[in-house]
Image (tube, rainbow, N blue to C red):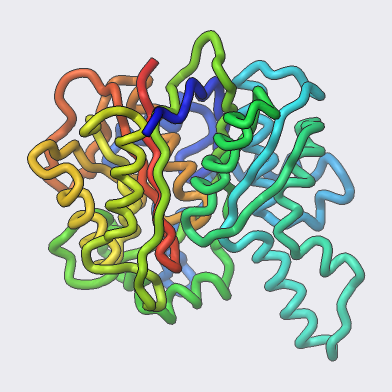
Length: 387
């Protein structure tokens, strides 16, 4: 199979518990301290935006009267998109495509309207339907950054951002666009969403002394430790640019063929297929590092570990994840994992998990794989290559 093509990342923007500039985000990654915090109200662990990022978000909300009603996930998409366009030096109004992935979409707005629906005898304001739909992510973000081309969003559970990234790749390969913005945005720190994860019994227990509430990639843990976080990341992709921060050299996608609530199998056959396809397209047999999906659940982490070892065997790359640091941002998680992969390539430094003894990548970091999985068994892998 041939390579994906000469498509490069020429800029990106993000917002999360790590901050909003590459410098402060990298500084956070160099620290062994988690960004996950325990709620003083009920002890629930979450990873909310950094305080300075919250200020930026509210400044966007205040710029237009209509923005007051927008869901938090939409504002996160707008913030990351503006930063990505600025970082890539793309001219405002010049034709570009936009694809944003989000698992939950406008969940905060929806939960508020439904609560009011119950308390007000079924009466809702007219803006309830437009503002609770997922389409707000793409339309408002496109308007905010002045994008004139095709814009859309998708929801395919926790792999949503990576599927948006894959869709952007196909649009670029088709030749219809030379520039595409792609990634994900998610604001899942809402009562209903957290209650859903707790109902599945995969959420981290409220233990006040926990140094690392989310134990992503810890294969010896005896309980599930998933924690939700919020954030966004979008990447400016160009077809055959003169230079790039990294090249997208491989893309793979598959699904688990298993009828379970989460779609996770013990051997991760779907993820194995996705990783092999990505390696095949990149024309390589191994990578220097993998940013794993590993959400902190016992079955999910074990399944990915089995899949990785089945694919790479004795050529095992160094494994890492950012869930211990910023929690699981659901549909945006793949994009924030791509950001970590990109930063490791740019800084030529591997970011380990502080409570594990996985060997760090030796020598130059040329190839980094990013995995994403979602409920229903969706699996997708991307290989980034150093310029």
